[in-house]
Image (cartoon, rainbow, N blue to C red; front, side):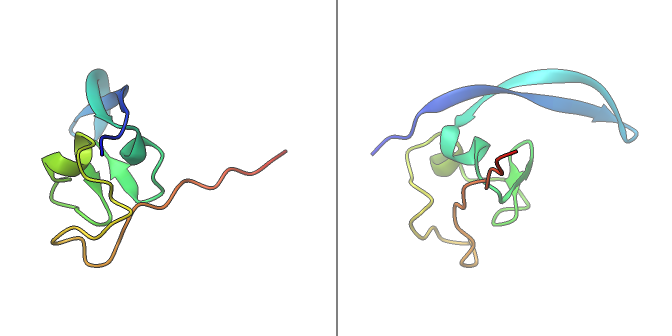
Length: 80
């Protein structure tokens, strides 16, 4: 199974200030996950999301070694 890949803009920071953006291709699953924190980091993988997940070849609704039981959870949208 392969998950759709999308391009997102990742902020580039220097000394705590955003100095620009960098395009990055990531799985759509990561981009809409409530666990995603920034760049290629998330609550499950604070040291960096594994390539199989970030590139969409592993569906992170399923267990992945080292995820400590933290899996994909879609961002909840609220209606106004």
